[in-house]
Length: 367
Image 1 (cartoon, rainbow, N blue to C red):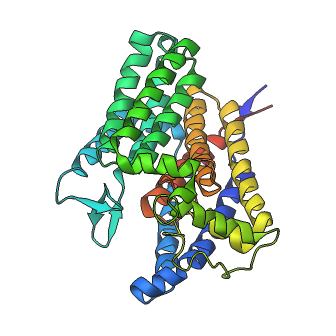
Image 2 (cartoon, rainbow, N blue to C red):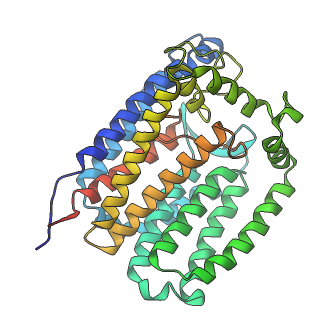
């Protein structure tokens, strides 16, 4: 006989907390020089990261204490709010421009990134829709087409910022959920062909994206331009060796790696902690994904299964892309490393999503 265990997954919670602590420590190490140079405070980024982590943990605890099925009543509302924010951020004078992308809305001294909210809002919506209409998923007209319209409408708004990295994470995560829910492989083959053509078009439409692709194949063709980031990242990883140069001893963080506390924090971890530290971090990521998949398999209902798959899928895609970029497997794109990279919206929303996953784990079936 099966019953709900009513206790959260302790291994999953420990891994999340361990990565969060490592993240705060490494944000300080990676950003101290930048904080001193820009704000005359070496702890500037670390203090803000600690604040973001605190807010995110409160959100995670809140989500852990409310039954995950409760959010099925609010999926449409949350999706409408997410679309509204994606439109508002594009209004001149409202959206803040950073790094060439108009992706933030300022609120006092802080800002939010609506595309991060959309990733979780889309996961909630798809989990609810697919769980309610599972038999329609195999139909392209009544199952796939309406969902694709919503997914690509969100993607189009994100691309107007533009933010290809975040949009790609949302789309890939959505496709993972559709595949697990039972969409036909032939439909995915068609979507793959159309998507590949669209991806090529997006790259060709923006010269800076084409430069990133060319520098991916040969970063030394433009070592001071488009190839600069990946070259400096590899310069950080290489000297780390087995045990690293020691905490705080990174050289590349001193104005070689652009924004080392965000997209390239794994390079600093590898430089200061070596191969051992890199493997420990990757193992912790692996444990979260393993326990997340286990939670999905043992969920008491299809909504919980799809919700867990969506959260784990989003987590996995971000880890894969970020570390792949840092070690030179993928072209450079702006994707944060979950729980480690500096960032308000990305860290807070990831912790909230993981709080949902922990809540599902508390209701998994036991024998």
